[in-house]
Image (cartoon, rainbow, N blue to C red):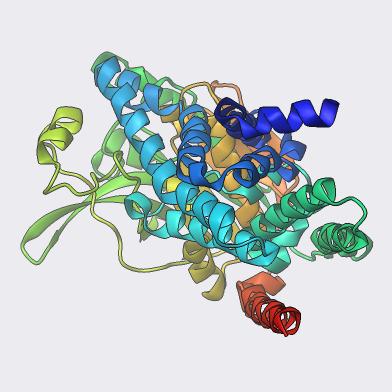
Length: 508
């Protein structure tokens, strides 16, 4: 009787809608900031039941699931564009709705359409989902590798070690496989094959973590690093009456950090000062003096004339004994540093940002080398979401990751934690310590195994100090990348071929 009621419910259109909303809710709860990371392992099961009941609604169910998921998880955009961006509430809301709808249409809908109508092969479905994550991370508004399944596990140091072998997409692939195998077990619990496959997927996921726990990496070189969180509010940055007060406070933080015994480097955030840093004497006099003793990394805007054209760059600067080295941000933040499809949507761009010039992307990967042996992979804000950008610096010999960001734009919600999750993934993928400096949180030190050993998530001025291991150790992923795909594709081919052979035999 209970089964009959359940099947009647699933077969109704409203039952399928509610199941897709349940999947969206479970996905939301699994994301960084909500704290229920385990729900990601069964979040898709309700959606799979809805698709099984009626695959004619696959497009609609994909839109419902995806739109709800993105609209809630990206709700911080209302603060970014509405409060800080100065746009009317209705305009910020429209932009959130627009991006959430496009995300569902181009990311979730292809997945539900194929999973509902064309394939029940778990490896094809899981690989499709990961390929859509990759497309979202490279094409969607110039690339938005945000809210990937793997990022939900950033605080689970056992599971997260798998990204050092399979990378972020590899962990997402395994998570989706677990969802599918669980769904298959519920549908046919007598089939032992599904139980074996589930156990195998879980084993593969946790094996790197077990191995690393038994064989920890031993480091011989440590550097004491100070991360400065300036802690002033974004509104104050626009108030010229407070500029001198803020500059003096940050200068005192820098001088105080330089007086810490045996300090090897000081890291300030992106947009650390409310001024043009490189051309402001009251700032550079202090930084130059301190750099005679201790190397400093900080963020600054830099304008250059290139081919008779004035270009503005978001730059990370290493100041070491009064000598400056630069890294210009290569992947700009959409809507914050550049406007996608600017020529097509110029009136919209001017509505949000006015007629001011946007940033230009840098061209070259870099490593910022200090005289005391620190080889920093420079990462500015949103760039940490792009594994390939970090990989470029690792291949150039970087022995530590330095991330500078201004996460004030997220407000006080889960957006800041989502960004921290992304950074944790990068540290583990490449086996590097990370010094993370933000304007008002979350500043942190992240170990190569993803453990966050020290952080400041309150929006206050702070100076964090920690001895971080520096190393040239190369993870499996840093050498071979996403090579696991080369093993999955032949497996899919073999399964399809076997399936066709079975069909021929049954027809014969």
